[in-house]
Structures are given as C-alpha cells and as structure tokens.
Length: 419
Image 1 (cartoon, rainbow, N blue to C red):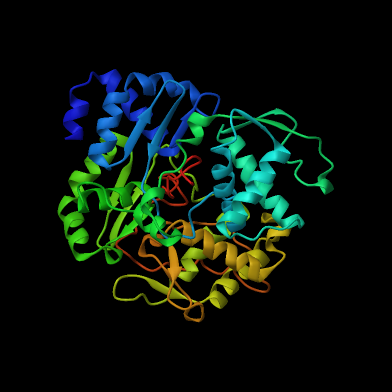
Image 2: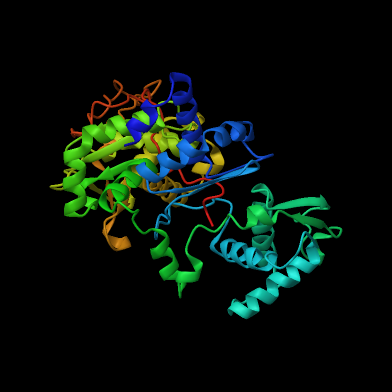
C-alpha cells in the first residue's frame, strides 16, 4: 500500500516525503522555533501523504498544523532503557503534575504561582512533595524540559530559580496551550491506573501483528525472533524481504535478516539517538570488550551468558592496557564502569538480564556483528604481544568492522514523545 502511495509521486516529492518521515520519526514533536523547524513547511505541504503513510505502515496518527507537527507513536511499555535522560523518575512525576497545572494556568503565569499549583496538584494526586534540594532540582528539570519543547517560554527570568536557596528573581512564563494539548500520547481518559495507562499506550495498531512487528523493527535496534510471539515470528520470517524493501523505501533504513532475528540500521545515523560504536569512554570500552565477552558458549538461541564479574575483568584489562585512552573520571570506579557498559549494551538491545540480578546477563547474537581492532597492541612485559582473541561465530556476523556500516538504530523515541 505505502509503496503504491509513494509511486504516485514524482521523484523529488518521493525524496521529500521520505525526508519528512525520517525527521518525524526522530522528532515526534516538530515545532516552529525548535530543532529542524525549517522542514515544517515541507511537512505541511505533504501532510496528507505523510498522514496516510504513517497510518498505513505503522498505525501512527499524525497531526500537522502550520506551527507544529505531532506524530503519535506507540509507547515502549515497561522499558527502563527508554525515556528522557535528563529526567529522573521524580522528574517525570513533576512533569506530569506541571502539565496538569498548566491546563488551567491561562496564557501566562508566574513561576511562583506555577510551583504552588504543581504542589497543589501533587497533594490532590496523593504525591508527596518537599522543599529539599532534590525535589527542587527535579521540578526545575521538568520545567526546563517543557521549555525545551516550546510549551513554556521564559518571557522574563528563568525556571531554574525555583526555591529560596537559588536566589533567583521571579520569572514570568508564557504558555503555548496548543503544544501543551499535543504532548500526551496515552489514552488518559481510558486508564484507571498508571500501569493500565502504560499498557494501553503500547497497544498494537489497527492491523494487529503487522503494525506490532513493524513498529518493533523501526523503533528498536534489534528484533529477536525469540522475543516475539509465535504468530509474530512466523509473520516476520515470511515477510522479511518485503519488510526490508518497505522500510528502505519509506524511511531509508537498512535491514539485516539472520537466523536469530533482524537488525535495522540507519546508514546516515540521523535516526540514531544512541550511536554505536560511539566516541565516549563507555561506548569504546563496550565495543572493545565484546570479542572477549562473546567467546563463551552460547545458549541454543544464540545468546551468550556473561557475569558482571567477567565484564569487570575485561573492562579492567582494557583500562590497564590503554591507560591514556579513557576519561579518568569514568574509569575511576570499576563497578560503576561495569554498570555503565552493561546498561549501554542493554539500551542498544545487545544485552539483557538473564533473570534475577544474581543470574548475570545475556549478550545478543547481534553483538557478533562488531569485530573491533585496537589502533595499537599493548606491549606485554617480557614477551611478544598477545594475539587478539577470536570472537565466537554467529549468523549475525559479517557486519560492520568497528562501525563501518553506521551506528545501530537504537530506538527512535525523541523529545516530544516521552510524555
């Protein structure tokens, strides 16, 4: 259907629609004055085609006006790897309370009045709030996030001046009610609890299995057959080639199909909100640690068990071998470095807990697609340099060597999609 939709357009219009679709996947709330706002006129021009494309391919609803475009994506469910990185759980609570308070605030409000309204909303909702520094910072983070979305404009002063200890002047805030009304994607009116709201937000699209699986392909770096239902896995195996062509034509994504599952990458890295390989110390250590970690025997479905202790040993070997290559602050604490490496791999879909924390972790067979080689081999005292370990074989191998295929598509939820 969507291929036919694009075939009706000329070559230039096709390229423009794909470009707009990619931007909306990366920025579900595209607004005037925000990042990539220059594409708003183009999105508005192709709004009918884009609306039909997202509805048909992914079952997503798209709202386009001249000042903004909002793509309503499905929620990720209970996924600790997703979310706005600047907000703590407490910050998310304040974000929800602030949005509730702003619905009756009018066009402008004073910061002190908004803080009072947020606390009143918290009391009404049974949420405990205090005046300690942690609470004030969490509330300030929530308000700064609303500023970044364009919902709040700091007409005078700044939202960081919350609390007497900050010593800030009173701030005057202007509220964009139109954007405020577009933030919440979940069916609040239908949910009777937070858990139910999360479940309702991740409901499959109108076409059931088709939309459910396709959303996973687009929104996640790796889709493992073992994580799908039997019906979903059967559908994807049968449709793998057709889906690869569809995702390339509609969104410019590259698909790699293997026995264990499907990996989706963006050759241009535009849709990648967490590129891997990356330039940070944690990302580079995680990349270089994979060959050693993947030498263990895998399970029947290709996952490789690994303990946190083993990850710590491999990371420490890398830190000791290349002491000048890392941020001293990042590698100062071994346990913290292990946590950062494992959580990065988990966010990329390359690792998951085996069960209870004491049972360790499992590395995805997709991790075999990276076979990095250090720029230099450290000299070993009193002997020849040790050869690099040979990584285990997998049907996901043969991919990029140190990232030549581009960063993995690590979840496309972006600002404006979190609430």
